[in-house]
Amino acid sequence: MDRLGALNAFMRAAETRSFVATGRDLGISASAVGKAIARLEERLGVRLLHRSTRSMTLTAEGRTFLDHCRRIFEEVDAAEAMLFQASDTPSGVLRVSLPIAGMLLMPVIAAFMKTWPDIRMDIDFTDRMVAVIEEGFDAVIRTGEIADTRLMHRKLGVFRHRIVASPAYLAQHGTPLTPEDLLNHACLHHRYMNNGRLEPWPLMRNGVDLKLDLPETAVVSTIEPLLYLAEQGLGVACLPPFAVNRKIEAGTLVPLLDGMLHDAGSFRVLWPANRYMLPKTRLFVDFLVDHLVLG
Image (cartoon, rainbow, N blue to C red; front, side, top):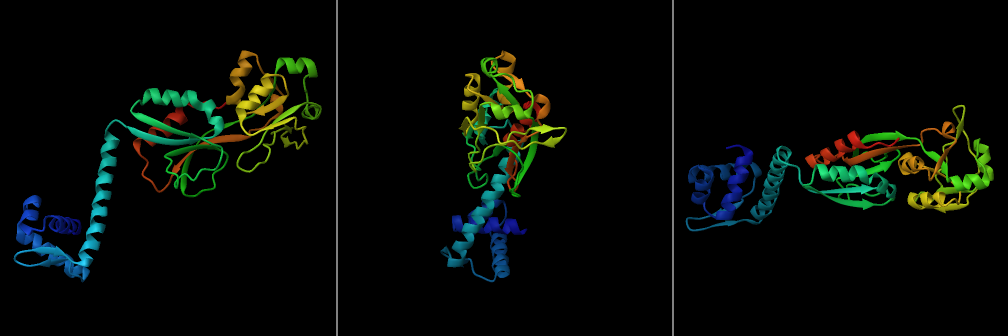
């Protein structure tokens, strides 16, 4: 009997208190069960069971070892369940964290839910740096580079911000034609929630970054209020394309200085590197890669 089989024989004997019953369950003789456990005890150098003609009880070492054996077989059962799930329809809860701007990504999330209705979404919206593993997330979507080596990731795409203002604002204050013109305009800024810094505007000329001390007419920690303020004609904003493209198409915002901005961000989906990637997580990642449009 192999080592895993011997552990199973011990665990069943400890539960049934009978070599005969254990042998019947395993399809072997009671003598084979007794010999397997004796060899196990010899290898470990401890007695696991007190045996007599009338009773069988666990030693202190046996009780401790039984707990470990149960955990081993629970892991085996879990591994088999994962493989079974891989061949079955993916289901269960998928716990995902999105940046607050991720609300603007909800069309692709909704499409995923319609495609895989047996997967139930548990979505957390926050701009803080969540502890992916410790907080039990299956996947996390974030912008920028990844520093945590415990995480696997795939890049979903790179995007270039767009500077926008409403037609009413431009009619009243004029249209900035160069980055320096922004110094004389009301500028609406985004502040990073995790570190309190202002997000820089990725301005450039001839491939060289420009650092301008732009006016701070308003500072907001999430994107949606910036959109609202810009549409209300209160200033010029610098926002990711997925936040403003529909507004530009609708005519409520006008793009400015498009040729003077460089790529400023990337979206990545992350998941724990030390965790088996469940089919539901793999489906979600692949769906994002295939359907998410950032430009």
